[in-house]
Image (tube, rainbow, N blue to C red):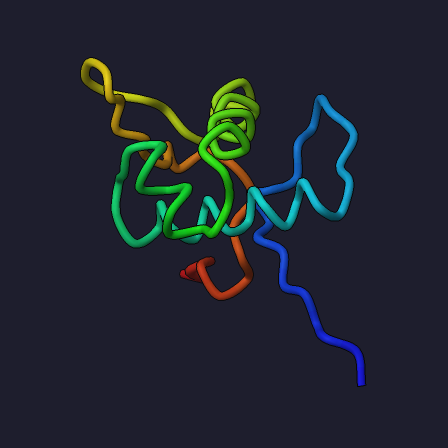
Length: 93
């Protein structure tokens, strides 16, 4: 049986090529940030990736305006609210 990989819709970039590993890594980063704003070090630890990989993908997400950093070093990274939503996050009025 194959493992089903769930990608977060905000993990897909509009200006770069989306490869499976990159989308998977960005999905894990976004899921960490959905729980709470965090430093790159904390994001890397919670997502199970290296610090340099976390910074690389955070900068890509920042270029797409999916995340933003606040404060001085170490920056705290937060979701901006921009980007695709999951169907479960859409409210119909």
